[in-house]
Length: 630
Image (tube, rainbow, N blue to C red; front, side, top):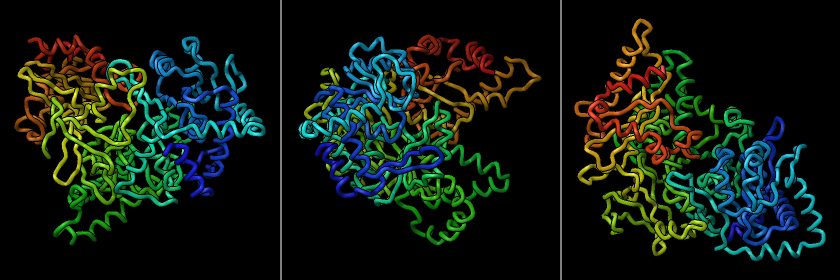
């Protein structure tokens, strides 16, 4: 089944249900499945009139909105391929590469993203037209309005509707629907070719152990080009006749984020998609809100959380045994405390679906405790993207859930041999959701797909109950001088979560005698330690001593000493004067650390840590960098 077949089936089944909610002026307005279908047909006709051919690529760069969905469906209806682009990309080589590499003939963009396109359009000789979604006045050469596409489409349908129908009928399940670019954590980003059937198969798989009623709404805070949001929100909700809502776009990301706080109360979503960075922000806001109510409220909150953590266990054993006798206490905490917290999320929110990266178990426990579980899943864009998921019916905190139906999975060693249950290795999958390959990159395709099996590059294992545990990247391992290997992500996350003075942290060991760390300090918390009566150097040494103490939690004698093997903990580390950000390319658009970029940027600092001077944490560079930061 193609996406167009899928969409038309839903229009027949749910014609008058609201499909999409968008804030226009001061209020949200909905468009029904039937309304959207009519618009898709008109705009697809307009694209045909513009000259779009079967298989043409069209780049789409816009904030999430009704016209984002209509644009994609219109492109697909016309037999073309959508190239969804992240709004986090800047008008530089990263954006040029994606548009040029995909050989896009057209670009569809919002008014807020248009300046980025204008900045680079001279470097895009293959682009014939730039279509602007908003009714702006200052159109430049080769720019046309989305409204013009609609007008042309209506005229085209009057005399050439048969031409559109003929084109629509050429769309087949195995045709490429999207070329979705990776975030470029290695060299150049790769264009993931996802077919229509990849998506519709993955939507079917998404409901292996879960269901949602038609009246559910979701507010899509993640970028709509994000593979997780794209499938698990847009098309999964469409599958059930449910509805999606866009966050009101602002001129800047910060303005959009402010709108989100208002929009969530207005839409009152039942389910939301989340990634770790969002989860951490939500947690901070909840805690800040409780703290603002005074010491008693904060003390009561912590008591309630400790009880909930104990009662809930890992979710699958919630309230088991004698715990059930204490349930009235939990109901009391919920009534006087947690219920009001949930009201801040609109009041209807049943649960989050977590994805995008590893979600720390403490975050999972936190949201489970306040009554809005965050059910962690796992996937990657090359699998359209869902591979496993926790659900209300089957969940175990700390895991990435059960493998979806109609998907084969293996855990393999470096030679591709199958490993037994409970043993960790590379996660390898096979199913209809696995990509066709990488656009114009046969070498990378052959490396990733072998005999229809997708080698994910992720490290994990499956337990006896068929829950998948994802441990980090299989190919970005710490490698000691004796060849032993270990995934760093779990250690890095634990250190960040438990060390108040560390904001970002990265481990390094490439066949070296010991492991080292790169530390981006938490500036606000560091400044709280500054003593005005002491010199800059004295203050720096006090802070270094406190960081040593916090990292010491994980070393022999510390409260987390058994959490990780000691050899993979940092023997020394260096304070960095600059954070990992999207602007300096050390974070990708999914806010994951681009390890290769970080290691290249701080190559000299890493080498310094393997010198006699660098091995002493109280070294000259750490004192200098802290002095700069303070």
